[in-house]
Length: 133
Image (cartoon, rainbow, N blue to C red):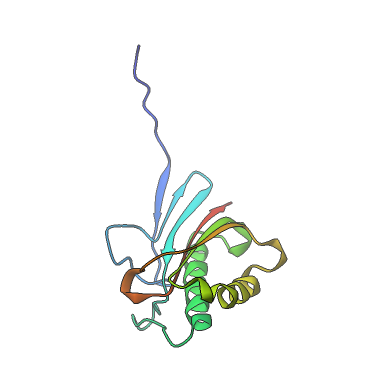
């Protein structure tokens, strides 16, 4: 049997509209017409500092960072089909949901939301997404 090679048209997305990667990963990867956005934490891309005053402000910064990656790929929140929300305290769920709902509105994507024991740089919320053109 002959081995088939699978080739994927893959483009890395890099933008100053979101914080630079803090490890060996890309802000986003386009594979065909699908964008895989790495998890965003509440780092302000202009200052490099964490937003950490309230969970609402952290969540807003996270979603603005996610919008930056989407914009760099020629997309918007309307293209998002799935999100993963990680939080360090499930008691923050209602406040995160309120901000998330303002960004996505009635056409919200599919989603998982889970509590984790810790996130990078002491963040309390992280959100990743998959979007389709």
